[in-house]
Image (cartoon, rainbow over all chains, first blue to last red; front, top):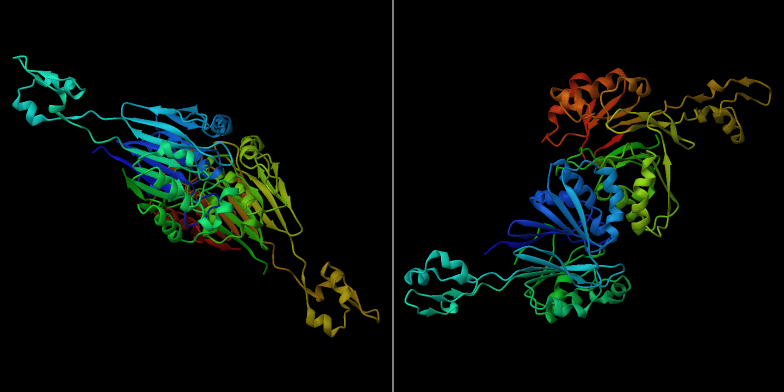
Length: 304
Length: 304
């Protein structure tokens, strides 16, 4: 199966600690790399976890809080030092261009690649990236400032041609493309072979959803229905529910409720408050609601 | 003796590596902390090396290249999270206020402390900080963009009163201040005791000089004469002298020549090019010219 995985580069929250980096991760889909958020120090984590960061062509910023974007300027600057070329697209809130623009102009003159800001409106779910095999759409979240999650959806793949049968029937190779695209096949005598007798269905398209930062938001559930992997922030234990809500964050139990109610396959929690020395309790709390949960840690790679 | 030391937080150069952080250091003078440069990730290094970073009231930026200042916004933002109050002064090139201003306005609204930019002109040596015990002056360097080093000078201290003698002579305590300030003393019978018979001279004022980034610049030598500690960049081995000059950097040998010719007590080299896996050769090259040289490494603390 084509590669589709997520590497966690940082899963801490706003107050820095030596245990966790600020938020960043890399989605690898068929060896195209996509960066999701870019906290301070992300470029070092890319090196530490051996990511081929020159392949990153699209950066998705969930929101403009420092722990999700202070590493952007350093990362772009280093891409220049290593002579990346082509284009890098930054998908972010419309303010991003103005906020980072003056820094880029000052520090990153003469970059060997171009930077394009692709603003999105975090209030509605919209498709912000699409190629032949992958689509990314935003997930409106609720946080102190406008914030969006991201849903990475593999596009439906063509069914697999039953090669043994095609050979036995002497189907010309020139007809394969049409059959994989759904056509029936007629042999020289005029006998019709329905498409479903010639192909096996492709595996279901895989989906990854990233939701950080947000309060507990049941409105997300239909958008997350059946995703293979959900990364959901779990800043606090549920005993701090009131604090979580005051600060526009979720608890581990709430993250798990979203995962359970959206029937996702696996949940990964992260964005831990600096108050937690270890994540055991956060993980246990989430697992008590949704057993197939893992706790993010720097360098963790999750396969879809 | 009152504490006066330097802690290296980062001694790498522009291209990030897992071996060294970008440039930053903390000067501790009598438990007042001064930050010198602030590369990306500096705030984590402050924690890693247990610096009481809330005590940092002045930040000195040598120049506005990213590897010397991309950590500034994250550090200031975190100072806000930990509820620092009062004022933080940023001593930097005049462009700094404009370059960081829009970022600060956007990301650091409602900080509990005030930020004041104190611009200096890197072309001339001038006093940019002074209190009752310490003075900081700029050292004009030559680099691709306007750059200044910094000279931290302890102010001359008062001589030590010879307490045993003062007690034997029955000198009233109320006269101590005047004697330490240089006055002679007359006993009740009118007999004069010259000042130098009552005090021992204070230790010579200590000086720390920071020179990064710069080409080999003999014009610095008179400004560095006799400093206790010189931090001087040594980006390359001397075999790459041409490259060093092209990129406005120094070699290890050149750093040592400056140290030798300025009769400094100790040299610390740093700002290593990413090409060097270890610093042994850079250190050996510098020591061959100036034996009392150490190689900077993250966490190294040098006492003056």
